[in-house]
Length: 154
Image (cartoon, rainbow, N blue to C red; front, side, top):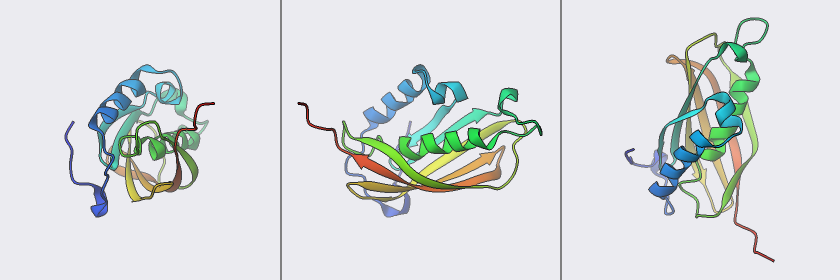
C-alpha cells in the first residue's frame, strides 16, 4: 500500500498508515454492511480510498439492474471510512448527509467507489465519491461527515 500526495493540496497531519492497514483488515473480517456487500478496500491512503464490490444477482431489482440502495450503502460506507486514517486515533466519523446522483444502471461486473476528501476541519469533512462500473460512471456523490472526539469516561 503506497502513500501519495493528498488530493487538492490538503495536509493530513494525523495520517496514520497503521490505521489504514488495520481498517482494511477490520473491513474484511467484521460482520456488517461491508461484509454483506462483499466490499473490498482496494486502496487507502491519505485522503483517498478506493473500494469495490461485485454486482451480485441478489443485488438486482425486478428490472435486472442493481438496486440503488446497494450503491447508496456503498457510498455511505466509503464516505466516512476514508477519514479514519487522517483523523486522530480514537475519533469517529459519521455521515450526516450526502447527495447521490445515479448516472447509469449496473447489471453485472465490478462496481468501484473512489472517495476523496475535498475539505477537512477539526469537526467536519466534505467527501466526494465517484462510482464506476467496469470503467463507466454510474453514480456521483458528495457528502458531509461529522468528526467526533471520544467522549470522556465517567
